[in-house]
Length: 237
Image (cartoon, rainbow, N blue to C red; front, side, top):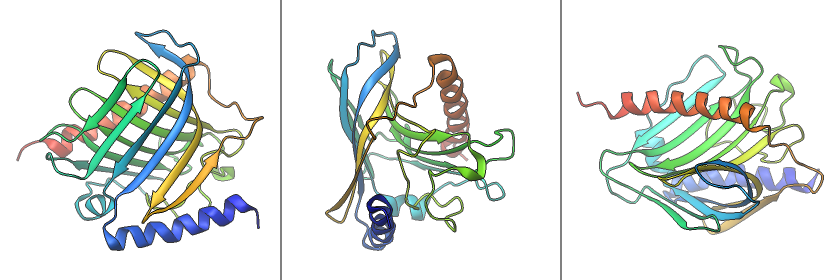
């Protein structure tokens, strides 16, 4: 069995342990800026992390499943300790801390979606507040041939193991600093649960980030969808 598959299986087991023990999960990441809006993209390096309390997501998730292909989890934050993210992009440090009734934890899974997305597959995790946002996204258009999801029985569970660097896929870091927006190619990612880490690194021959126009369409579509659910989730009764 390939080493990366063994690591992903271990990660899957750790995710279950993390949920049971209420231990936050951290995605540490690094990448290279590919393009931006409101800022020059010059190959700057980006490093950062997103930390989420997965038990809070498990117990308070406003998920919207659709058949077997689609799942979104939105957790409104209230200034507690369920979410923190930060990144340094070579210009400044961008931080995303919890605010009462603003933003929150977002996890989205599309698996061979058939309702308007064709053969689209993706896994998304992010954190946002009223001014800033940091997201991680892996996506492809391979339908049932996708290698993003390594567990055939995983369905659209958000806590399943993810392969961040399969062939013919697109892994991104997306940052909204409050004054500019930039997209970076994900170069490496480490998932840490209960003090145990699993690291995945982009193969040297891999360069899957799409042209800005294509990526912008996908980004706008996903963010619009997430925003609509966020508004629904935070709407007062």
